[in-house]
Length: 138
Image 1 (spheres, rainbow, N blue to C red):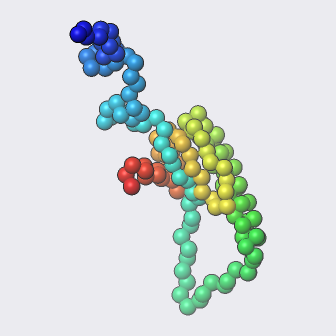
Image 2 (image 1 turned 45 degrees about the vertical axis):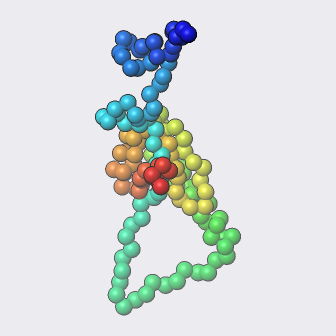
Image 3 (image 1 turned 180 degrees about the horizontal axis):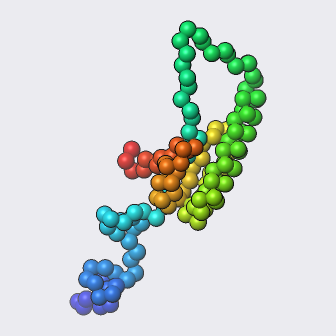
């Protein structure tokens, strides 16, 4: 029996042994010092801490229907989406954002972006931002 010649392992990238020219490395898996290309980030508006006054309870907000609450949430989420997009544009970060979720009924958006966007969002006083836990860790 004869052995096959010209197997895929015979082709080496740049003369480096063990690295095939036809195999791409996994994103973020090239080494411990490299960062992944894209990360998933959740962004919400930062809330001011409520001032608690002793002895007095805050007045209750007027009772609204569920439809009114939903419409108010949609409007707030749309305003937040616009403000985040303006902030990204003002800080020249739109090129580092791959995708932004559509506004929903809560002021919370999901971004797929470069790690530097997350760093900038965490420094901004108007946003709370964090990464999502990968599903393989659950």
